[in-house]
Length: 397
Image (cartoon, rainbow, N blue to C red):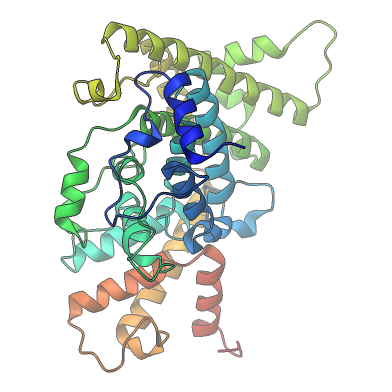
């Protein structure tokens, strides 16, 4: 039977020299004794999986709101797909899969209901109140360092520094790195931001962009918000289609969709691995410490693949994300959150007791913060239920 020490010995013997070893972790904000059979990063992964915010991802929007149908991806299925892709890439690069999985499973914990529409709305309302705005990476950080209350000896989940850095520095097309000055523990967040981003966290970033681009194509084709003819403008799409058209193969529309998305992912992953391996060699990366010299861009696609991905992303932006059905969902989401925000701002005593302390005097800024935290923690379904109770007659309070 392997003990924690045995697993750590295995990592040192088998992982790449630039991989993050569990035994070499920078540690936790609040020191804890080591576990007998699990490494630090295994414990992080398990804490994320068992937290409340992770379970709520099942009912949070990716692109299509949950009432649009059961097929479409939610934040939870997206997160699982990111973790799967990231572990595949990490295994090929001989990185620490436990660290990769912990960062991947935590990377979207801070998303509010209704996807990016919800985030943009909360960002606007907080900026109007002079509170600095809303950023889901910062929110993810605050969830795992403050809002999750599972342990008596410390706030949050007390994750390792490597996982927290991966959350704070997560950056893809939709993920603007936030300002640590707006976080509750400014000094701690600033210290984390000064740390180099591990190769494992960089892998999660690219796996996230792989997942949402290719699986949005899948969902878009299923919904009819984008068609195969729309995507034929893309060289990447045309190459994927050419690879699945084999002599004698008969593909239904559904099978064609699955096969072409599979080929798209396969081509991009192979390109990513080859380009990343070349950069590791070219930059002389021989240890995790070497990453401080090259903090970004090691794990990335080739220049030609970046251009092809940008082109197909532009097609999605034009044809799918601004499709009238998606625009209608987005507008509805903004109206629901705006009405909820206003009704609670007008009478905060409608908020639950554990959210709004009746014995405390709140400033306007404090009240905005309380309402934002309450709404951000909701799932799509919870927000819709709250809306019905408050605005539709004869609904159970």
